[in-house]
Image 1: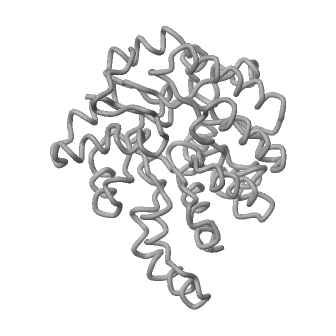
Image 2: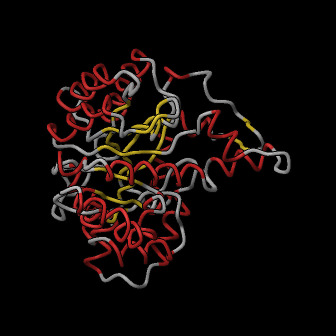
Length: 325
């Protein structure tokens, strides 16, 4: 079975020294993040992962030159292993005009498949008008943007996640992987819907991970509330239709079947995709999820494990193509 994973991270040499080995009880997988060669491929082989779509790991990405060097390093990795790796561009989102320039370079010259950007920039959400050129570029280029969680601003952390009864270690986890990362991306998605972005850019495609960052569970209520406001404002569509037509959702970091069952209830099967979130999660966990699925038929499994991403990203693989491993 071919398996494609789309939220798979690395750490560029351009960001050396930015990632601590340990932080508030969390051990960063530094060696795995730096490996975009034989070690990573060996782990993929061990657990049946055919292709990873690589992206720069979560940082406060502002430096234009670092992004450029990161993308050049990604290009070399993909060129060395074209059947095993594809790439999402790293963009200096804080500088939208330069981000658009780098986005176009990555797609047109380097053959990248889209871009992965943080969900906030200095605590600011992506519905700010100054970020529209990045979304417009994605629509014009015909490639998706993957909106990925990022660390909350210091102000948001103090207000939402810290206090005199919670330990720094617990506050860090609540603000990131246990809750905050996902709730903030979900909020970002709803804010983008609320400004009618997908009426303005009907061909824009967004990818979100972690089972949809809480949005699929809430979409009925979002439709019943925000949807009424959108209708009154004369929007062509509503939140549920936008979710089903302008979003792809991956299962990155989610290794029980309950979130996937929710996605199957809410989304077209053609928009549900597998991912791991390597190396923060393991390929072993991802393969175990696939092996545990007993509610999808053979066609649905192929869509989930590879066909949807092959089609969306133009990975150039078909059932009649034997990838060069």
